[in-house]
Length: 253
Length: 308
Ligand SMILES: Nc1ncnc2c1ncn2[C@@H]1O[C@H](COP(=O)(O)OP(=O)(O)OP(=O)(O)O)[C@@H](O)[C@H]1O
Ligand SMILES: [Mg+2]
Image (cartoon, rainbow over all chains, first blue to last red; front, side, top):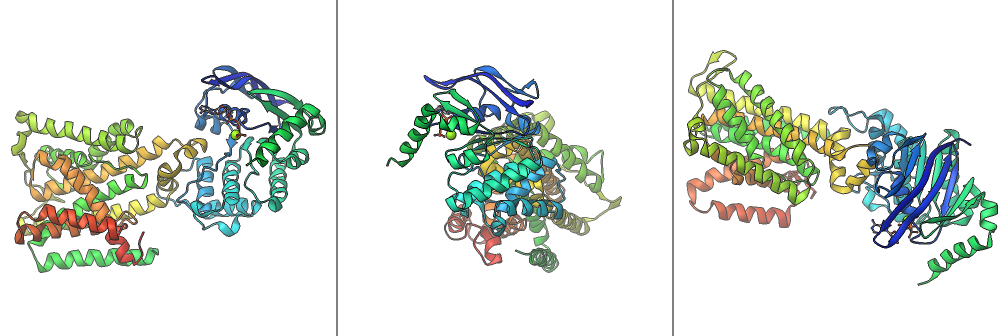
């Protein structure tokens, strides 16, 4: 598979904490890559570096062969890389519909001062995306009135609305009700597959990982300690310990 | 509020202004000032949508007023002077906006204040050009080539102010519903997300800033044409504070708010000055307190019958 994103030797330390300690990783065109690993392993830091929020202290991030490390987020977004957030980043005073319409507007770069945001084409498209996430009934609800799961979904929906070529999702299913999880990931995966979008997602739910990931990379202390097909990686005893370690940590009070 | 109700309210407001101007000739001057300040306050309101408070917008008002004072001798027609002053102020707004749109909250507010103080002292110190605190007289102008004697002139500025007020209110309404206008509120709530959507927040704020400068400039030109005399005090920081006060009083929830606020403000000021001297500051303080405690959305939200 031809890689569209290649991380090479990424390093970033916060004080003494090595959040990225030599990360090498390729993401293939159309590939779904899951990132797993315990809390504080540097998963979010990786996404932050790929999207321009953090600049690696060393290493390169090649997007279709061109180094994008250190570019500002909007330049990277413009290249076709979008992300969602571990903690949803919504425009809290706007409705869900307007949040999505703003993303569509940003994508279209259509900034006439006089035409409304809620124009027919964009409203329809936003409603269509919301339906995919089961959010259509919340279209007119203000983002700050949503429950955690819906906030999370709206956050991902906004990234999807940007129509990226690569979508980076930070714990997309955390906070989403267990009963809805698989259905929503299924819809999301179908949409992404149809359009050939690559996806990288940080995930704690191993069922989601084994069902939707083409490949799994395991993070630990700023390093990738395992990388391969889900069946093989998830069967690895060392990884199991890591993964079970996560679950124990989550279960602890 | 629905479009129709807001349009109806605007129409009633415009008719009330005209009726008051017919009934009480001495109110024409006051109402013209109120409409002008309402236009400037509308600009301040745009920035408030982004969560940014400018304590220096009177600078643009004063800049445009002096521009009119300087240019009226050469460009003798109000219908040329008004757009010219607006254009020049927009350019100043663009230059200053490129700088201040990088800052937020207290820094944004104080930078605007600082720049306005610099401008104020320039007006005051360069006596040979600006006549210092004495200010400058604005030569008589024509309206579409017609020389107007005193009464007609008053009507001309009032009607111009009303037309411009309606025009800017409509523009602001469309703008606030447009992607860039909606994104303004996103600066207040989640600026980082704008970055990740590929939309530079600075540019979003800059557009609002230039618009607000254009509005303040229009206000300054109208004030110069109606008072026929400009002084540095027009750009003093208390005048900037007055604009913020007007927005809070009128309410930032809709484009009518600043105009309601401005008219209420000017009327109360005139009556207070006439009846109870020295009580003006007391009234201001008390009203501000009441609005903040009981009607956060200002007069506009009271009219709307719902607290914003
Ligand atoms: N901006 C920052 N400043 C200082 N330290 C940071 C910063 N961002 C991350 N870190 C530290 O870097 C390490 C990796 O953090 P990161 O958020 O990438 O972990 P993670 O794998 O996403 O964890 P989690 O599963 O809890 O989300 C942690 O020790 C964290 O405290
Ligand atoms: Mg994380």
